[in-house]
Amino acid sequence: MKAATIYHEKPWLKTYPQEVPADVKIPEKSLIQAFDEAVQKWGKNNAILFYGKKITYNELKNKVDRLANALNALGVKKGDVVALLLLNSPEHVICFYGAAKVGAIVTPVSPVYVSSEIRHQLENCGAQTIICQDILYEAVEKTEMKFKNVILTNVSESLPKLKKLIGKSILRGIYQQMSAPPEELAKKEGFYRLQDLLEKYSPEPPKVKINPKEDVLTLPYTGGTTGKPKGVMITHYGVIANDIQFRSHYPFLEDGKEVVVAYMPFYHAAGQFTSLLSGIIRGSTLIIITTPDPDIILAAIAKNKATFFVGAPAIYELLKDYEKTARVNWKKLKIIFSGADALNESTAKDWEARTGTVLHDIYGQTELSPLSHGAPLGKQKSGTVGIPLPGTLVAILDSENDEFVEAGELGEICVNCDCPQVCKGYWENPAATKECQAVIGNEKWWRTGDLGSMDPEGYFHIYDRKRDLIKYKGLRIYAREVEEILRAHPLIKEVGVIGVPDVKVGEKVKAMVVLESDGRGNVSEDDILQYCKEKLTSYKIPRIIEFIGEIPRTDVGKVSRRELREEEL
Image (cartoon, rainbow, N blue to C red; front, side, top):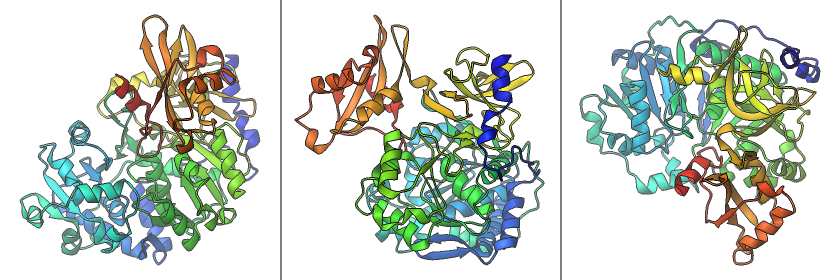
């Protein structure tokens, strides 16, 4: 049990700043209790800034309570699943908390999902009520599903001039390619307009008793890389616990005073937690951005004096070379976080050289509500995702067997299931839940699917997703490692690496490469192979190189190796 002792001794505690506790007490209260308490404390403060429009906490609660009353009248009860197919907007916040106030389970749906993906999620969770951006309703209609309640809203209802403000983003394409359904649709049986409901019903929500540890608050879907996405059961208690863990790890963040640029998608765990959940119940002001346009993000930070910023690595990769990045005095922010994907060391170094500030990694996954690690302020260690949050026990287990590995050895990052932020499991899928759980002695551990290691100081290193591991003649190759080497080439703009099945060797390494404009026609496959020979062990060198125009990415900017594999097949 020597290896087990290493992790149970929590070597990372030695790195904790003096004011950060080793453990935290979690009250058994619901998100709704936390929301109402926030309104009592900061009712007159601005909860939301939306392209110039201001909504105070008192005003937000009024709308939330009206919607809760309306949903109750429409027959939505505790335990029912309410789907949200919404862009980042005040309506998203109102609808999330309004549904939670009737005890409903909120399942957020990605606005970029196609009809088949929407259908799978909503059939799987049994949602009978959907609140949908009207310009996205066409995709819902194509599912041919029948709902008890369809509530439509338009992002311009919060700000009529918003359409004119939408710049370069996926939303621009949505507005160009799709149109709002006809007004007559809202008059059909079972169809409603959100604004009509908010005007019709009084702010008198039903009294619902919530069991924080047992009752599911939100049901995001994840894990579609290896199969159909699965619903993750996140409880009220898990969200409250993770908020307390996060704030204890960063005690300099002040309740009721922070200004957060909320550009990351609210349906995604990263955007949902940092803004819609923790941000609101801590009395922060959310600067909600519907379109992740760099000019709008930079202007929002500068104009509103944002205090901390959370972004995916893709935004820092863009901003580090962006001409207008210097318009923001990044040193005035309390802390800058990078999350939702692995941060390349080159991106972090270039960012620090450009802005004079350090990116602090935070790590987790949807199943962890969503955080387990974070780099303490001023203690980011290059190439790591930081150390476990207070009250979090993490270990490295063998990726195939239920046993601990020694510190410094490679294995799978696992979080003890007694930690308060670990999810209840997957919705109506006990087999998938069991597959993610390792049992050692009388302890149960949640397997994250991420391969990594822990150094002597308790910092955790991420190497790759277990499913992205490439096996060549029995040897292990990490796609991320090869990508980082190729990305450092001055004439390579983007790269995605996957394994291609081969009966003779198992898998061959294939690199899909996007060249910089001045590299097109000047860089050949042989040039890249020669470059790799100087940087990589022979068996890690790509056997296949394909030049493409664009690397597919997920909606938070990750390289979508799933799509690359599908295209290859």
